[in-house]
Image 1 (cartoon, rainbow, N blue to C red):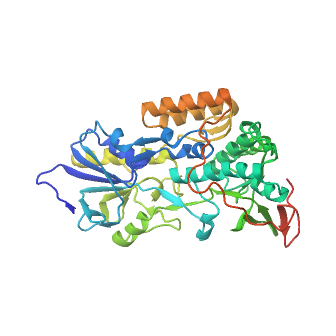
Image 2: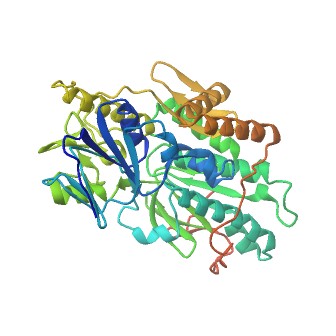
Image 3: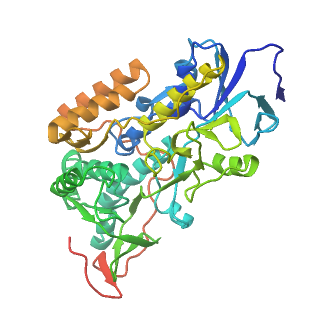
Length: 453
């Protein structure tokens, strides 16, 4: 079924993706003399930075989601279309959703990024990443099922593996997950079980670089590392994971190859552009980088097509610093607002200077009362940074009622030190772990050097 265009209809803007980039583009066009069609395969906008709190039982999925139709209910020029774009025809200016075709005058592609396992896609089954609500629910299932299984496990060797959590990747997601799981084990759950002592839990963070949180100032990275260690997190830097199989993580530090037995392995080490990048590469002959991100022009269009924009995590914008901008919400928000403004000016025969990102800083939550904030002109740590982190995340939540819900949940969790969303849902609660042949789950191979914990 084709969506035909009416004669003399306003300029048709099609936005693919309801993340931060697509959302703020549509918001910028809400009062413009254009027709906007926002297409997403989900009917909601997801606040990804707080997914780790869903995965660790602090918040529920509804707390960090906003229905797209509700967001744009008062924007009469905006239509929300539920569907998945399968193809694009730049010559005919059409996007294809199965048997449905939508025509456009201007197209904005803002479909974000997926996990990257650096060519080891078979690891996905053993080490899920965190990009969607389903990912967060699966992580939550694995984390809390591990404690439940340990409560029923009489074999000390198997119990150690169940109480060992390995996180691969020391960026913001890995750091925030590690801190949240440590607080779960050492504070929230300490009185909830009778057969296990949750303080025996081991949370291990593996980072390929020489420090965690490499995107922030080195002194803040050092503060974050010390804070995590005080929470009980074991950190290995300069570490390369070489295999994940049968509940065993194999990693290499220098010439030393080591193994960790763990039932719960979580991935936060890399991202790659969504499949829309490959579609644009094939259809519009654009260039993509090694991570599948589309190389964009200084005004966020693609080469050869002035009416197609790519923004957010899918875009490789290197014109400002020589390096791609980070895949964070402020980048996508600013790019969406820029594109919305540029489209309106173009309709009146004007344009804008090339896009310029204003860095608003970087931040990461370590644990309760612990965070690091790098604003460039000032650096914050500890309680003040933690409060700033809370305020910034509340600001970026979309709907007012969502802000209230999250504030209430955080306040109650702070007072009670409890997490009310510890639901185990989805597949069978737990799968029997594979037998472990060594009594020491922290075993070394080749060099036979044990891991010190």
